[in-house]
Image (cartoon, rainbow, N blue to C red; front, side, top):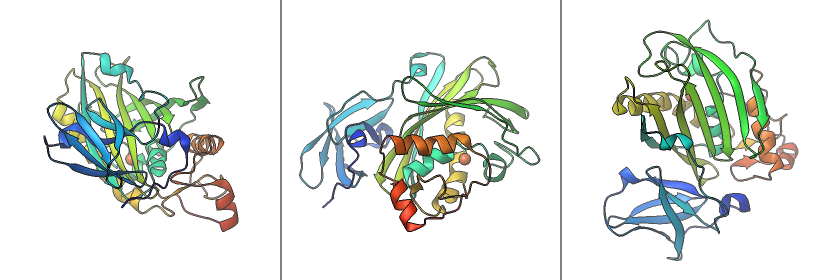
Length: 298
Ligand SMILES: [Fe+2]
């Protein structure tokens, strides 16, 4: 019996990825959980159906980008449109669905953080002494997305096709509370970007599944290499994320002492607070009264 535990209407009325289509076997039920609600996903030759385990009621579902999506309430808008998914010279594939014992908001924040590259992804996405996060710009767009531009970081092996270390250009976009995208300069085509979109499934407030959607330029790149590179990097993040204390993301800017100035993280927490997102977070008033004082370890 599952108890719905989310009161954030914006999340209840939005779409969330709940399964990778490749993980489904025809006519074999797949169980998962979304915001405290146990779901059963079945796929037949006719359609994909999602029902709540507690009531048997059907949940809104659709397929896009190779994933199964669910909405527990009334959908108010479509899933995020990934423009690059229309470009035929890209590999479009799932990078896997990885369960992580931490709030999905923590996972999004870690995805935005370049400062951990030399320490967590040593020899791949960073290495000492290139540890400095150079200044970059952060704005909130007319579409109400957080956009971080002019991010640059030295990376020894930035992608599966990288032959040598390079200064990599990044753009980050927080699209929805649990959806974030990364645009990264391609080593073969310097004017174009590879794209990783992370659709984070809030299983409950302390657990999530990270579903990554990869849109990499095909030139010189094998699909299998793209996928295994993503999984290698994510395997390095998972234990760091699971050691974060507390599991939920404090929205009080004073609750944690950032090791480094991280303006996109500060902006993300503020943006969540202004939109009254509480699921997976320690809201401002709670953090203040409880004296939460966690540490940044990611
Ligand atoms: Fe990482």
